[in-house]
Image (cartoon, rainbow, N blue to C red):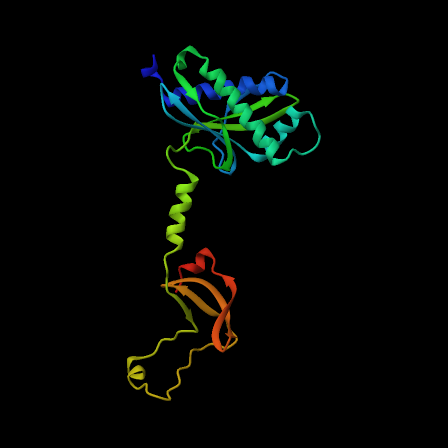
Length: 238
């Protein structure tokens, strides 16, 4: 039996059990219908799957819906704190996992403790609109989480990249001159850059514009005070 269990079957079971558990938690008959996958960050509850199949399952919901459902479950008019929402979502998913594990078709499947974070819905998620009439509603997305990737390893990689030294160039201006004029340059020659001294200078990393600023004097040396960061469209211009 264990050889026939797949992560997709586990995802499907968790999604079905979430509907039933939400109904029990919110005190009504929950209904669900497929909907489009969300494109915003929200709460993500993940738990490890082991035994007959291994991997991670992630359950996503948007922050507003999660707060509304938590408020309804706690029977309060006050906006719940993030820690209350996180704990309620984790227990909700944990109950759904326990119900799914009790299914004969998932014999041998075990679930770890649910952990809550924020982020985007899984790319392969089963997404559905869930409603308990006159109580609360939400959009849930259930899918597989990326295995073997931890926030610590991501931070380590980012730290290694951020330690790389890059040349920073301040450009006061640029102009185009005929080759003859360039050949005639010598000591004392003046080149008109076609710009006012008060205009901001360009700050570049390599050939990429990243900011603009004004020239200042720091301890007898020239420096640049950043006044604006380059937008996406400006950053490619040099």
